[in-house]
Image (cartoon, rainbow, N blue to C red):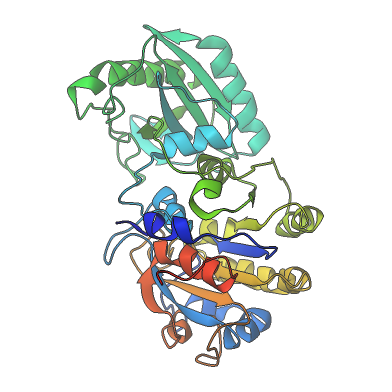
Length: 404
């Protein structure tokens, strides 16, 4: 029996509010003896930690490094091993594209290539407006490849999504194609190779898409190539309302995270601007929803760039804004990340992620701050990420007693 099957009959609705803050990639490792969280100036997070149930969570399992999809599904209460969802679907949903059972979705990056070697996997992080114009150009020139209709949508900066729409429903393994991103500059991009017989024709379309795009983009200084990632088709997953009885909204500026939220039935309005703008939007919608997923992206971005000071400052910046959320007096506030992104590694990692749950019903006073080392002292210990949602519901008074 999985956790959702256990708790579904226990769900009870009330007027409690839950604010679920995800500082993307917040976990880190020491550089000169301090992690990014320890180096950040966080008086508000630290004061909250002292009054909260603290601990660390493992997004998937010990030693397993999660992508953003599994990382978020875990903290949303869905075992990421049971619900394996490709990044392409998440990106496409986040950009508002419809996905059918005839479709394969792909997340793409503009990139810089020279003499067949990857120079920059993110095309110098071109501005979003430049990415939109390039995507419009590709869409105008690529309508169909073989029997597949090609649908593109621009994302943030260097990202965009592609849907390959075939004439008939596809087999479940039709999207089993490797990423073409070599994950490191100085290497050649990989070919989109099929990993099942059903994926062969999809891989042929992908190969032609890549070569056609490269021909169209060849005169661009930075974005002269595309990398494809997360080939996937649409799965079935219970909604937040079905699983947890929650009317939920996502406040996220990046499309992929809206896609994750849309996948589980959250309302996903397009929200742009700074973290402060996101919090202002949360205030506007506070009376309309039970559950607020607030996603803060740039913590992760600086981690992936290896920018220790920048990541610490993004955490400090959020700390300065935290009182605006706390002044709303939600019954439960959760602060965590979807995974760790240590600047030392410049990538996601398997390290457990700090988490705290603030409610009137915690032991508290087990740690003095919000950091990896302090949270290790907390009452939650180290727990699977998928257990956070049942704990959150319990703290919100939304779970009845089990059994007689």
